[in-house]
Each structure stands twice: as C-alpha cells, then as structure tokens.
Length: 116
Ligand code: HEM
Image (cartoon, rainbow, N blue to C red; front, side, top):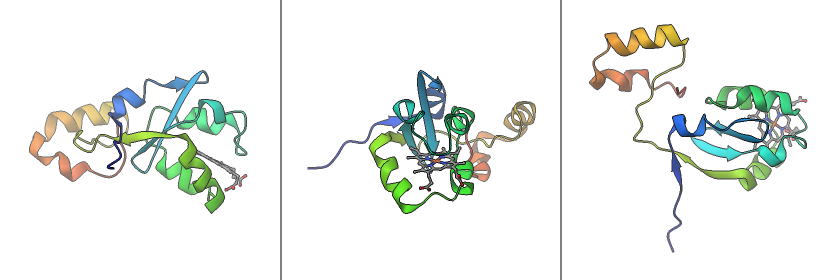
C-alpha cells in the first residue's frame, strides 16, 4: 500500500511557531515538536528559535546522534511541498528585492535549501 505523505508549504509550517504549537522543518520534512520541547536535551529555546523557518543548518550544526535522528521520525508529520517556489532567506528586504529583480523562471537559481 502506498503511504500518503502530507505536504505543507513553508508558509503553512511557519504559522506553528509558538511553545504551544511548535513545528520545525529539517531537510524538507516537517516535525511537530510541541510535545518534545520539554524533553529536548538541547533545550526548548533552540527549537523555539528554529521554528518558522528551515532549521536544517542549525540541526546539522548541533551534530545530532543517530539515536536523535531515529527519535525524530516519531515527530514527523509530513514534508514540504516540493512544488512550492523556494526563495532564500537573506533578510526580508534583500529578499523582496530579489523577488522584484529576478524573473520567476529564474527562481530555481535560488534553491539553496533555505525557505521563506
Ligand atoms: C524532532 C527534532 C529533534 C530531535 C528528536 C532532537 C533530539 C536531540 C537529542 C536526542 C539530543 C541529545 C544529543 C544527541 O543524541 O544527539 C539533542 C541535542 C541538541 N539538539 Fe536536538 N533534536 C531535534 C531538533 C533540533 C533542532 C531543530 C535543533 C536546532 C535548531 C536542535 C539543536 C540541538 C542542540 C543545540 C543540542 C545540544 C547538543 C549538545 O549539547 O552538544 N535539535 N537533540
């Protein structure tokens, strides 16, 4: 039986950015870590800082163990919608400028793994 993967846009995922409702996005997958905030050995603060954006770099920089990566799967609720155009986060004003300057057919150039 094929499994159905729930797809979320980054915009949707980014709405869940509080300690009562906290999602993080790592490597194209979406995790609901609300119930894990108090248990996370790295603390709830890093997760709350990483919510609302792509946290792949921060996750990798922390050097998580295989055990941590296995545990993570329990919190996975879906994946990022791959059809969503990807614009890198530089800062929001630079981003707006990029959006204005680049024709939409060039946005693939900006696929750096960071989303907004
Ligand atoms: C579902 C998602 C996550 C799970 C299950 C998870 C799990 C863990 C576990 C088990 C540890 C203990 C060390 C280890 O076994 O590697 C840890 C440490 C840590 N995690 Fe996470 N983590 C998650 C997401 C994140 C994210 C998104 C960040 C960064 C934004 C982060 C930052 C850290 C940091 C800074 C430490 C402390 C490392 C240290 O003390 O040296 N984690 N995490």
